[in-house]
Image (cartoon, rainbow, N blue to C red; front, top):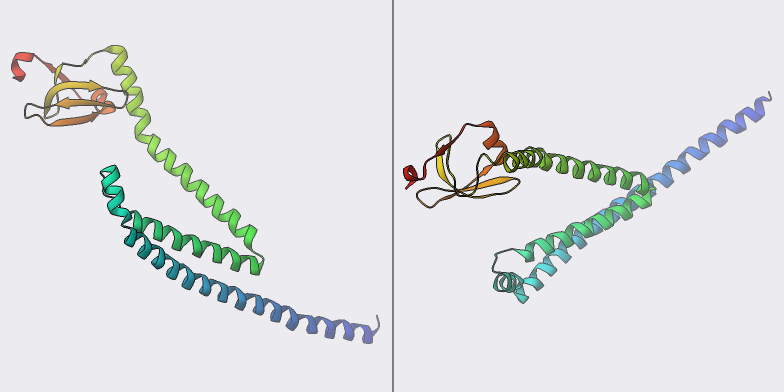
Length: 195
């Protein structure tokens, strides 16, 4: 090996490193500036949208039309704010060349959250549904029966697949999950005792 060639290779390698670091530092600074602009723009647009919707009185219009009180002004303005944050963060990641990796990670996390949410919601629904099938098939309680479960006593008003609706002597309506009816002792009372 020629010592002169080795020296030129080493000096070329050392010269490339500052250029690489300089390019990376420039991209990082630009990405940080993009994120800061996004934070400012998101906050300003969110407040502007909120003020506009408040002047239109969107919450009052929804309450009058639907009869429910919902703070849509805040919901929409917050959504706009975070959507703008998201767009500017994606632009900053694109500047760094990390967009696809991070978006894949975010989509994977969202997918995992959705799956966990579905599993947690099914956790209570499935046992109640199977118990509802059991109650309908065996017909051990029917609409109009007077029952006592634990300390709750009342008339069965309606049985669906998930829950049983019971009306107490005082006129209160109680919803009992069907899985509870199959696990607990259910006492059928005579109708004379209830009134």
